[in-house]
Amino acid sequence: MRLPALACCLVATSLIVTGCSLTEVSGGQEIQVTAGERSDGMFFDPAEITVAPGARVTFVIKNEGSVDHEFESYREGEAGIDEIIIPPGATRRVSWTAPSEAATFPVYCDLPGHRAAGMETALKVVPDTEER
Amino acid sequence: MSSSFIITLREGLEAGLIVAIILAYLKASGQRPHFRTVLISAVAAVAVSLSVGAAIFAIAGEFAGRSAEAFEGTAMLIAVGVLSWMVVWMKRQAAGIKKTLETDVAQAIGVGSAFALALIPFTAILREGLETAVFLFAATRTATPLESTIGASAGLLGAIALTWGIYSGGYRVNLRVFFNVTGVLLVVLAAGLLVNGLKELHEAGVISNLGPHAWDTYNTLPDNSQLGKFLSTILGYDSSPYLGLVIAHVAYLVLALTFFAFGRAPSLRPAAAASHQPGTEAVPEPEGS
View 1 (cartoon, rainbow over the protein chains, first blue to last red):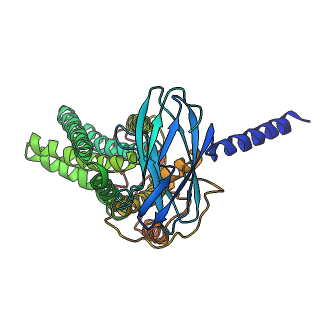
View 2 (cartoon, rainbow over the protein chains, first blue to last red):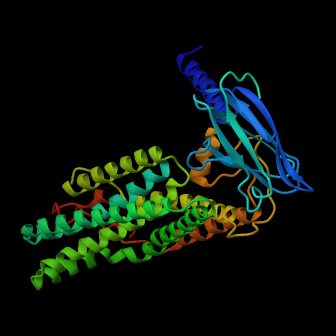
View 3 (cartoon, rainbow over the protein chains, first blue to last red):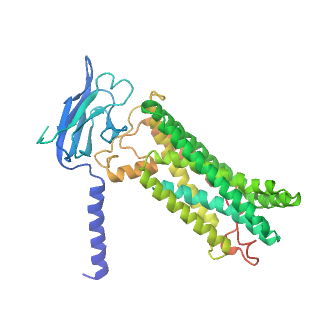
């Protein structure tokens, strides 16, 4: 194989590999979260999530409700999870690395009225945690 | 980072060309002693612009939660308006800016007023600076402070280098092409800002309904992946956009690009064609504000 052709193959391969990593949202343990509405309000299930310090995790959030929901914790002093909208019936993935020290952060839906209706889960960073 | 770079590169070059036009005119008319007045007023305009920019960021820091989203969304929409005005409307006005600046400078020197002379570059550069401040604030809402700082600094350095090169006659840049390309890029950026601004206002509850989701491409290109975030910052990409956002995005792009394409072309002469009297002919007119 000539050098230019080899170079083209290498570039194409690296582009494909790089392109894949640029479009993936993954890493570490997957934590399943369900979002939705019920008769007494709105919810995230589980209502409490525990991870180990420094752990890399990926939240897999499924919206089983009939309206949009958000998953976020990005205000000052919070977990630093950017907001993401989850349409009804859709699933979204959010990767996050826990801080190295124990902490508790609120993760919530910030759409008007949703957090007040109960749509919040406590994200706890606890030493010696193996799984939530 | 890319949007901050384009903004400061273009706005910086426009401000630089204004100074270059005035200095070239003063040099050609034997008024070199007035260089100091022009340069001091230019520095003052930059300082005021920086202060206004810092004030905008400080005011934004006072808001939290829903009011912060409303403030950011409003700032983004203002930036879209300012940018649209700058790129499209000013294209129609720019044809005579070189002549206007030279006439104003001649009149100020004629009446012997250093203040009047200082006011000319000051107001022109302040306008560029305020536009940059508003637009940078809006752009940094969707990028990290580090990315925005690196991009804006690189753009500014590029603008200073280009301005100096053009003024000294070393660079031969086709400014018509430069301003047309950056003009289109800025319209595309503004369309993305429009979408992000409307989203902020929707999340703040200011806009109650943007319609159903038009489609869902999350499994193909998640908007929270690295590539998705980049496209979201630049183009307003959304994996599952609301129909109202799609309509606003397309309508803005069509309208702005149509006005941009069919607006009156400025009488720019490429620097490459400029020539025999260095310092006078070598500085072409800027296109935008």
